[in-house]
Amino acid sequence: TIYSVFPLHDAKGRLIGTMCGFYNAKKPAVSPPARERLQPALDYLGQATSRSVQLEELARRCGLSVPHFRRLFCETFNETPAKYALRLRLNAACRALEDSNRPIVSIAVETGFYDQSHFIKAFRRVYKVSPNTYRRRHRLGQ
Image (cartoon, rainbow, N blue to C red):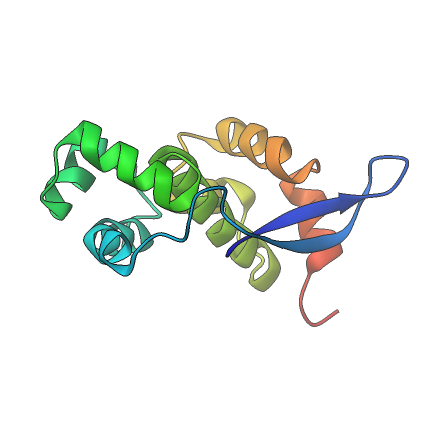
């Protein structure tokens, strides 16, 4: 089973919440060895949310060629390593927006974006709102 979290919007396009979707993979469930084989890359991606990561580095950590690593990763997670890494970085940014008053530019740099503009574009593409709007709507403790 694979799950994803999706933003929910009202008729005017405003973010009103999130939805978690569970679905079966199109292919039979991935055997544990495939997931275990990719674990070094997943661990590295989880620790590297503040910098860009090269595909060659991820493949090397798993002891695989780049094409084999990419194919196995896509089959296992139904997304490319780059999209997976972007999702991790945006998740880290969301937590920072919810938990702190740090400037958006600081959060952008801390989560591996080139600058605030790059961060805002990526954030809007996924969440359909600006980071500032997201912060106002999801602020913890309010």
